[in-house]
Image (cartoon, rainbow, N blue to C red):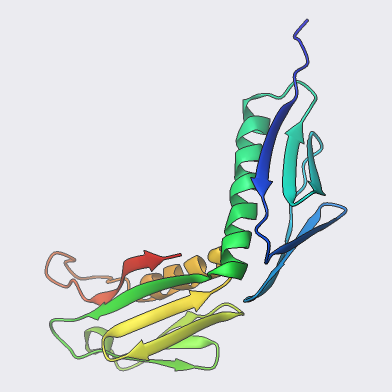
Length: 180
């Protein structure tokens, strides 16, 4: 019979961050805002006490439970980092054939004259994500790493070159740096 061991992972909470737990929903508040995320698994327990978030798995954890504990820890660390520092990704508009114009209209990122197309291409901007365009530079920022990253992916996907040789047509809006 396998021996039952308990595995724990602890995350220290900074002084200016407030973390609370309701059922399986974790709430993180900081100077930049607040985030909530549902983290649940039958074998993994979450506890908040004395400025420490404790993630534990007691019922003889298998490889998947150990991996999921690391995932939960990464999500919590990203939430803490998001409400204290935030996340900022920089993108660059690249074109060789037709001058591309980018703009933000409501919750959509609009790419006009991409490869000489008449109709503009659009990418969805997720809620609580700020997108700014200055010339060829695009800055995507926010406190939720998942939403900021997904918005960047939406913009890159909207400028995917189809039906042309991508070795020649390297136009697009590309991620060049991540901060935070």
